[in-house]
Image (cartoon, rainbow, N blue to C red; front, side):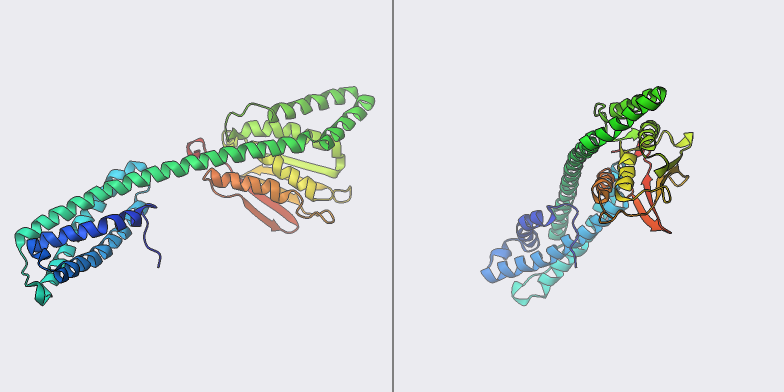
Length: 349
């Protein structure tokens, strides 16, 4: 059975305070009689330590339950209120148990004293209130530290994915293919060549833009995709068919930059294309808050997973770091469908 953990320091702090608190509670109950002999001292301290250890563990269960019930920072006051009230009630019951156990041990020659019980209750109550605020402070610090580490990891992942995308597009192979296409267009259709060069410059301008954040508006990403898909369609011709249906209402949503480029690149690298079986890619934004990329599956020989684990894996990891719902991937009737959650500005880290 897993013990409750409000913070990562719960049982370290419990180990430090359990013995001193057990001695203090035993002294509050018995007074100077606690030191009437080693047997009395060790027995009383052991009983108090066992009972208090179980008590602090039970407090941990309740604290964790309240933490899950009131996860928002704005509810911290409510969370602490219900925690402390429960701890104070439990403190009285635990002290009654300890005092009654002391009475049942013959060689203690002990009888419960109401005044000592009140002082013990006040002391244990103070310890509970102090620990409640201490653990809450540690919990807040750990959350801040975890969030900072998550942001740093997201930053590293963002730079890595951006560099990976840039490498894939700035590779000699990519440049050769596009320059070769441009060269052919210059001879055949100078006007088309001029448009191709203009769209190619837009692609690189977007990819080389300054890093302004981990997310971009869907509208901005789709403007980039128009240029990117234009290059691909000129290059592959009838071998590649694309359809994009994204309504204006979804344009304000956010997503990681180059997310669609990574998925489309996976589809092109991993699937064979022919006039008889062209690669068909459809991009749609539905009412379910997902941007869906659907393409038929026709794996290249010996490269069924080429590029997919790298590009899609990086994108999945990025969504995890952003604390957003995961990317959905499914295959049905010879098609692969990838659902990219669109992010509201209010949900960003």
